[in-house]
Image (cartoon, protein in one colour):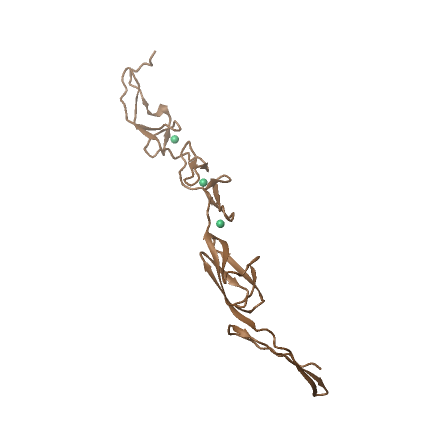
Length: 227
Ligand SMILES: [Zn+2]
Ligand SMILES: [Zn+2]
Ligand SMILES: [Zn+2]
């Protein structure tokens, strides 16, 4: 009853005209044949997609007949966002990343550009973040640097906010006090180190051994408390 369909493929860009001949068949005899009027030439062309900037782009097909709907896909790298499509011929309209294949080869560029971040702003405790003012991409990082001391938390070198915990053993303003011999009028002392931030006394320059004021006070045998 029906003839098998005849399929063929085209791989060269160009215009092709198709004429269809239909035959009526009865009991193995071709009773009639009819030719369609030649259709208008149909163009088959290439779709080339390149990336301009940091990202990758592709089309749903690389070769298509005019009138075919083509879907484009753009994927920006982490440091960039997609801006727009640039198309030659430039009268092709791309809507929602789709266009209709014209009777021409098509050259497309996906344009990417690097994020335009705001300054780092303090985030939740111990982190800071920044946002791309164009696409809204947000980066978050832990605060870093600016070592903590015995009385002050670390100040983040990126966002400027203090974070983390005190470092009770980090005395950055340690002053050595030299030994003073006791006299009859005044107490003397052995050498010691004093932290002017936390007000603690230490026996050594590394502040590894904390001592009390009594420890380093030296009194002469006949010292009298002042009146
Ligand atoms: Zn962006
Ligand atoms: Zn920070
Ligand atoms: Zn201290």
